[in-house]
Image 1: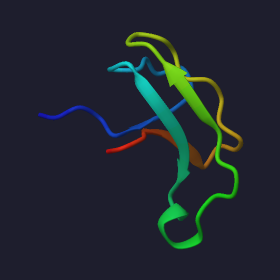
Image 2 (image 1 turned 30 degrees about the vertical axis):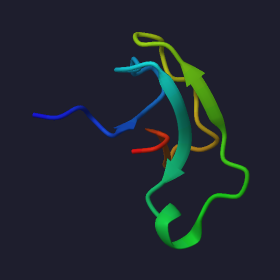
Image 3 (image 1 turned 135 degrees about the horizontal axis):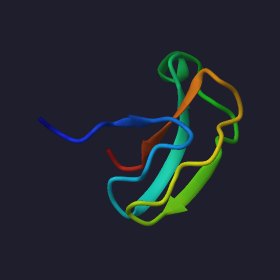
Length: 60
């Protein structure tokens, strides 16, 4: 089983990296100025801009 690809606030980062805010409709609509965070493995994700958004690792 592979690592999760989307995370919510409070989840722990599985790996060091830059994570970007994404939404269910982001493929079609895009998110203007999405939040980005740099986390170390084990750090918790912050809150997203709204409840429909998730964090996704950039480059994946």
